[in-house]
Image 1 (tube, rainbow over the protein chains, first blue to last red):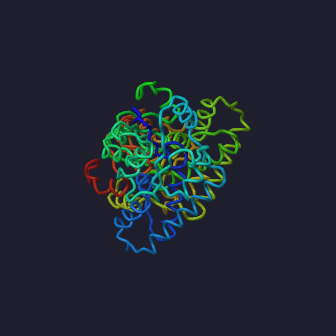
Image 2: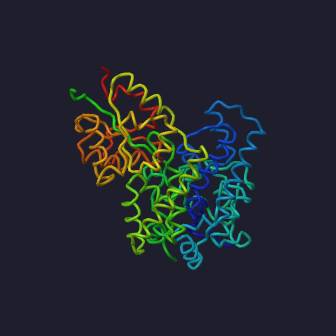
Image 3: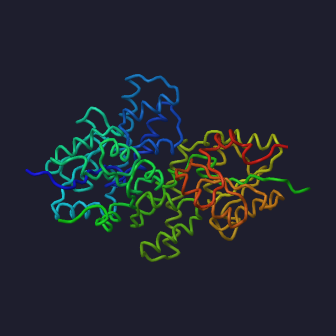
Length: 227
Length: 227
């Protein structure tokens, strides 16, 4: 198989599905239950990292002792709270997400999904999105050594597609996606649909910022040549 | 009574109490129940307007018919969902909020609260903050003709304090607070604690941006001279 010109490597939460705010309040509930009281906006600004890195960083900042048991309780608490939110049908694909993926498939442009979440949590969202992980490369936290902002997830996704990461586009809503893109020498495209500001994404290296998948699809000729 | 030099006019949600994300998901629940499916980040970007203006704008954008009954159902749905969130103790004062208000009182600097919410919803938050509306001027949506981004709320708050609005500081987390401040010729101070980006606040006219009330208190000499 010859290497394709450009591949699209997508983050999942906040990029293809509208799930960031539910994750934020699920983490808040889990942290509150552990006696860790953090402002919600600070949790929001860390979302998109690996859960392990995220909780490590928060506990270190608050000076609370980091034990394996505490990390496990935090992780389980978040997964349970998120499943409650996502299970009630409140989490939906973002506008244009299915259409964008369909457009790429129709035009023979390879694409994959790379998420800092674990498959247990991602499964809800893939179902909402209509993506079958048996047919589309989906790289989760479980499959790599380091999660974002390390580039492992996106590099692995490019390898699965047999694409050169340096010719790939990384599409994400969080600054961690943009940092990972730069570290992998890919081009980062930021989406506002995770609730971050345009400048935050640009400062983290986004070479272009769109509102959501629908807005990216409307401007697709700015970032890829159709074959 | 002589007019004071500088008054502090505070927004409430996201500025003194950590309640923005709960409001966002409460509005989402209410809109979903009405069949209006909006991305959560778009709801977040509108929070801080009056509820009436907010729902009018959202319904107009989605092309759904605006009827008094629908607006009332949306408003009631939001209030009920928010009360569930806030009633469980999940809403807390932001770091430094009580200390900042205490500092102003101790130094004879007048302050008031001006919120686009109604007293019914604000009451939860004032309780969490330890503010007694019988002793501190609290201007709510019920008391003015137009809410933010109209300057009515802040102008009324300044009048209650017998202060000149043009010498006042307006402290808020949303671009609507900053626009209202400019329209009243007050100076706007932005806080990141509502989850907006620094540049969004600066572009709306904030002359200074801090993380949260604690960070503002640490830098208080930048914005007011102590007597």
